[in-house]
Structure formats: C-alpha cells, structure tokens
Image (cartoon, rainbow, N blue to C red):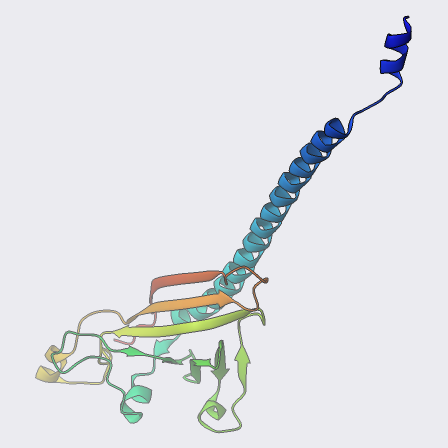
Length: 207
C-alpha cells in the first residue's frame, strides 16, 4: 500500500459524511416516532369506542329486557300532562322519560340525569326516596336520549261497545334515539361518539 493510500485509510469519515448520516438517522427516527404516535392514538380510539359500545349495549339490553316484559305506563304520561302525539293525531312527540309497569305492575322509570342514564324500580320512584341506578359506566356520558312511543294512547284501555273501535289496534312500541360519547378523551383527540336508533316492541298483551 502506498503512502497516499495509507493516509486516506486513516482519515475516517469526513464532517459532511457524518452530517448526512445524522440527518438520515433523524429522518428515520422522526418517521418511526410519528408512526408510533399514530398507532397509539388509533389504539386508544379503538379502545374508547369499544368501551362506549360495550356500555351502551349493556344499557340497551337492560332496557329491552324491561320493555319486553313490561307495558308502557300511559297513565304516567297522562298525569304528567305529557302528550305522546301531536294534535294532528299523526306526529309522534319525543319524551325524555320512559315509564313502564312490570309484570307486578310496579313502576320502572328510565331517565337521563346529568350525563348518565338511570333506572328506578318501585313506587318510591315517584318520591325523593326513590333509588336511581346508573346503567352506564363512569367513562361514558349521555349526550341525548329520546323516546318515541307509538301508539300515543293506550290500546289496552278498558272499553266497551263502540268506544273500543276508536282505540288503535297495534302493539305498543318504543323507538329509542340515543347519543353517547366517551368522557375525558386523550389530549389532542376528540371524544368517541355513538349514535343509536332502534325500535323495541312490548310483548305485553292485555286484550
């Protein structure tokens, strides 16, 4: 090996070469960090979505079970002065409380209180001593909930003769419009929102 070749071999990397290598490393690390943060956000969003769906599914199953085994408490709405249908006899009015009577004719009430969905069972529901239980997890909040009850009058109301002809001949049903979202999302992310609409038919039949 000549003297010139030995001198070149001992020189190592030049400053420009080191700067190029460092720039490439920074680009690769930045890209990897960006991918990691993106994947982390996606995973957190998926987990938040699963929590919202699971909590709402449990609440819906509870409500469906109650409605299937109960009947709509039309007397509650009459006494509260709440119309279930407009004066035109066609347009259904949304209410924010679902009033039922179970197989023992005990009240079952569902309501939105603050940002959660609550249920109360028994005659005490009409007093301050009523026990209301939240049926959504603490990390899920209710944005809005509406109940559309059809028909607007009790089809099983006691009647005789011609009066029975005016009663609707359809099974009571409730259309639920429900919006929920996750609480306290991660910084830089928006809440996970779930919109749900379903119709539940009461299986109670008294005629």
